[in-house]
Length: 311
Image 1 (cartoon, helix red, strand yellow):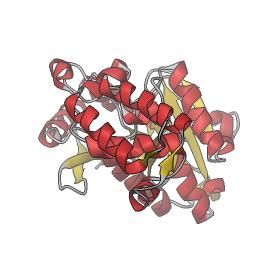
Image 2 (cartoon, one colour):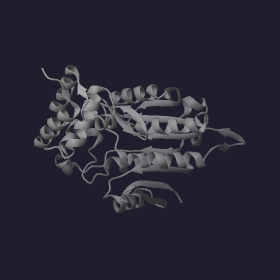
Image 3 (cartoon, helix red, strand yellow):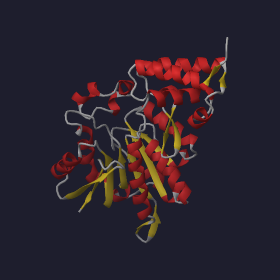
Image 4 (cartoon, helix red, strand yellow):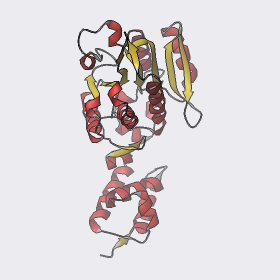
C-alpha cells in the first residue's frame, strides 16, 4: 500500500466533510489530521508532502466519519483551547466558546480591583463563584490567571453545577491545570446552598457568606431556536443550552438570588446572547428594582456580558 501524504489526506478530508455539509471543512480536516498524527495544524500546513503512517491515517478517517455525522471536532479530539489553555471536553458539558473568554477577562479585572478585601480591620479572601461551571473553563482559566499574578491565595473560588457529571469534568480540568486545591466544587441548582463558609471557617455572619463576584455562563438559547442550531449542538447537553421561552428563564432565576448572594459592593457578570442586550437590562429592572445593569460587548462589538450591581 503506497504511503499517503498530509496533502493527500487533507484534500480527501475536505471533500468528504464538504459533502457532509460542514461549513468549516478545511479547518476541521486540519485539526483532525493533526490530532491523528500528534502534531499541530501549523506542522501539517508546513509539510504537505510528509508521509502519514497507516495507523494515523486510519485514526484520521475514523475522526472524519464522526465529524461527517455532525459531531463537534472538540468532542472527537477530546479537547478545546480556551483562554490560551487546553481543556478536556466531552458530552458531559458544553464546549467552551471563544466569546466566553470575555467573561474571564472581566472577572480577572474585577478580582484584581478588589484585592485585598478588608472586613473588620483584617484581610479576607475575595470571594468568587462560577455558577453553572460546566467544564470548569471559566473558573479554571481565572484561577490560572490569578496564580500567575501571585494572587491565588487571596481569592476563594467556588464552582457550582446542577450536573454531577459536569462537576467531575470540571474537577478533571482543575487537576490538569494544577488549581484543584484552589477551587471548591459544589453540586446544586444555581446558588442553592453555596457559600464559602467551608473555606473561610465556621461561625461567619450572613454577609460573610456572600460573594464579591458572581460569574455565570448559563443557558440562554430560546427553546424554539434549539432545532435551528448547527447539528454539532445536538451532541451537547440540552440543559446547557435551553434558556426557556425567551432564552432568559435560567438567568432570571439567578437574578432573583443575587440580593442574598452578593456583598453590598459585589458584582455579577453574566454571559448573554448577542441579541439579548436590551432584554437583560429590562429583565434586571423588573427583578432587581433599583439595581444597575450595563452590558459589555465582545471583540465583535456584540452584547455579551451583563454587569449587575447595586446602585
